[in-house]
Amino acid sequence: MKAAIYARVSTLDQEPENQLQELRRYVQARGWTAVEYVDRGISGAKDRRPALDELVRDATRRKFDVLVCWRLDRLGRNLKHLITLLDELQALGVAFVSLAEGIDATTPAGKLQMHILGAIAEFERERIRERVLAGLQRARAQGRRLGRPQARPPIDGLRRVGGLPVHVAAERLGVSRSTVKRWRRLIAVSTEVQ
Image (cartoon, rainbow, N blue to C red; front, side, top):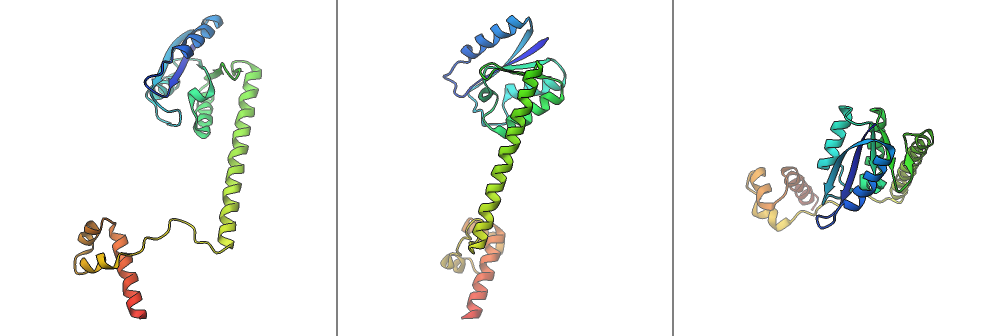
């Protein structure tokens, strides 16, 4: 089998060598050949990483059969991205091994572990969604206005740019054209009411 070894360190002063030594030993013990993909100084929270992007491209070209990483958090810290990536690899027929967690999807037991992890991740996503929706409903029921608070129009600033075209006024006030239009309507309504 051909293996892809993936290692990542978050800062440039860190070295991935500890990860790589263990990964190389594992791959060698299994009798696999390996290609290494290493991201240096890149957070695991980022979905786009040079070496990981290359790894995914090579996976679609079937350049390897199994991806081996030191720990799941080396592959990604964002659960959604991690699950999506593992699903994508599985769809391509690429197995997955994580040494620290003891996951080896080249075996039936490892495949079961991957399915369980996927189910737990989906369950957690749904729970988060339910909590968010419940919080929004409660806030609406209490009469709270949701979303970003509207900026109050700077009356003095609007007076200074009152006769100017909307795009010039927006540039001078440092806001969008639609904001200037909305502020002008608000001021027009408030002066009619008075």
